[in-house]
Length: 161
Image (cartoon, rainbow, N blue to C red; front, side, top):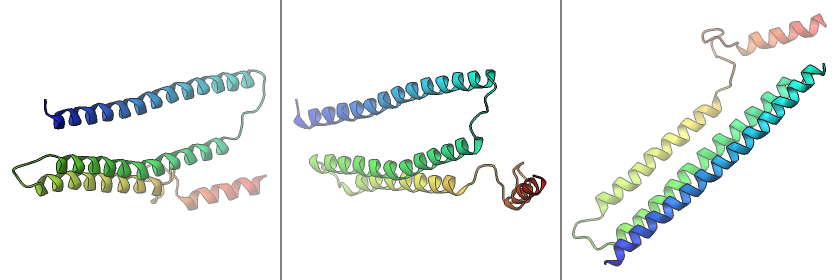
């Protein structure tokens, strides 16, 4: 058979194995995190049964927001980088093939798709990073509190104590 066929097949098998490994890693990680959550839940229930106070909710919320920001940052960074790597590999495959027709339109499609997906990924991540959960800009239009309402409520709590 033709060597280009086997090159394409081996590249495809390598890509499937790579993404399959990532999928298995994410699945195992989610199982471990679920087990940790179940243990923490049981510990919290036991603490409530014994009458102990629970940890501060603000600390937990800050930790969740930090994890959310990290996930967005990593997505914003590695999705475009991965796409550029895939496009470089596809470009190498295009130039490795002997074709009777011009390669430029095919390369335009490859890099155009990579560019569009990268721009959409980065803009969505940046938009999600700029939003603050629980606050809306217009008071109670969406059910959230504005920053001035929240700070006034906090001042009232401190004067009452």
